[in-house]
Image (cartoon, rainbow, N blue to C red; front, side, top):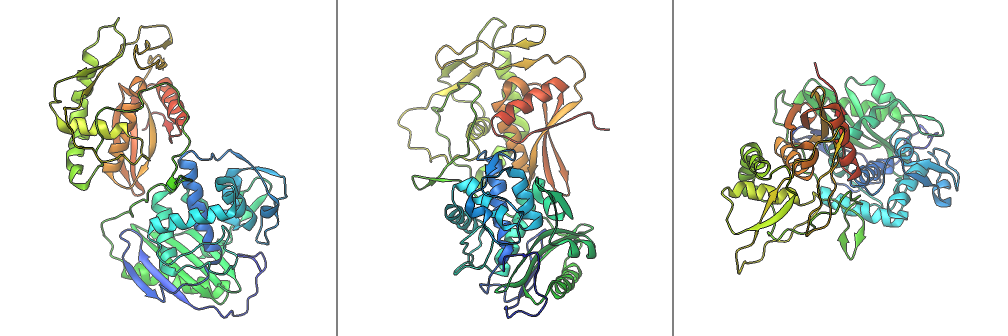
Length: 489
């Protein structure tokens, strides 16, 4: 019998019971029973399959519109299934929908093969990611959750995973609350629709069933400012499992404080494909030739450095940009010239150095200096006006960089959003990194962080419609997330 099979027996199964209830805002445990007992997770496994899929899309390994060719192995997985055929081609986004909503085993296997080439390699990545998330008692052997020797997890680990899905990938979390969805070849219904429809505030997350596991569920619900995540392993039927989860949810809302500081879990390091025993970076589309290395060592950011970096983010960078833009004349070209002077503001320098590093790089600690490191001083070139398009001149020593800017005529009431983050510090840091990478299109934009119940939105505002469209196109070409928005009332 497959995980989350379309037809399941309603008689009792001999599966051990385990449960955990947490306050999702703080991670505080409100109730637990056998929470660390290793049990069969069944299709709760697909939570990790989807977590890795979201990570792969975000880091440019694969896109939602990538067309995946279905293998014989994927097509032969038992129900629950989408009904894929060997050789069939389908967009990656529909595989994600089918795995999240229908709990389709064939779609889950196809996701793993599309990202890592084989289900075995994908299972190894699932285990690396589980370790990075702190799931200390979980071992995955496949992408779907069908019973396999050694494929085990715990109520605590699955609760941890559910919380990370909510906080780490909020843009995808809505998948788990859809009662039905278009999966490309047909519309599919949510295996969790009974609980979603019956419990007030429920909006996810994932069901699971096999004979060995019993009826499992990781559920999340929000009422007012409170959010509870509840996990149950070993239910005797869909009805009794849902009733038990509802009872534990009520317990959680009763015990959870009305006001509590939200402490989003720390997002783990990117667990990409393995190359030479190291995680590989996501694919990058280069749009120009740029300097590949900075002669200034880039220290690893630390907690002690955070206040200094925040100071640079909020105050120093505006002055630095004014200094950069004030020096060149109209006919001068962009140059990179060494300077023997030490920067006046060390905080600005460290912020610029951190922004130069790609988010998924792991910079090496700075080696002891035997001589003062040269300081890079950027002289920005002013574009020569044309009706609609301007181009910067080539860099004499480092190759050519061509930056296109569309005319900024018209209202400057548009903006772009580059993501939702768990803290103001993280949002401000990403805005700074993006601004320094896109000086040609964001030099006149204002950085703005807006707080909501979901987190901190990182926005650039004060752009024309053409500037917003061009900037998003450039960021998306680099593999970064970006969306535009118009005047807000």
